[in-house]
Length: 141
Image (cartoon, rainbow, N blue to C red; front, side, top):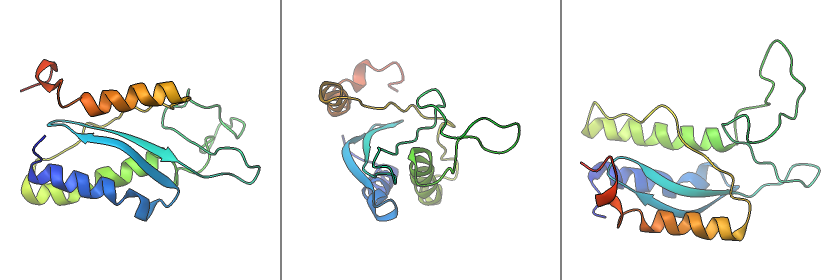
């Protein structure tokens, strides 16, 4: 995959994620002409020594705070996957708009918690092989 100038920006922003989120380990990553794929490993423990992983989709994990009619019942929205994704999108957008003022991301993203080694291998292989399969992609231009 030959990266465009905006692709180079996306790569730099991806590589800088651990500088802003020291609990993140970057894994497989690829930049495609109209999207990116990446595996982000969140390696932090909470006070009870349980994994503290939060995702955007509320069905992924049960809320840790009982529901209430007011306020955010899902806890603080920083130092989690949505804040990492928000950060990379902001970083890329700011620099990409210097090249293309109309640059923009799709408003949402897909996340998935990888629960075992075989799932990790399957997803990592999908990401690695994505450029080879680009010609068959329904969004291939």
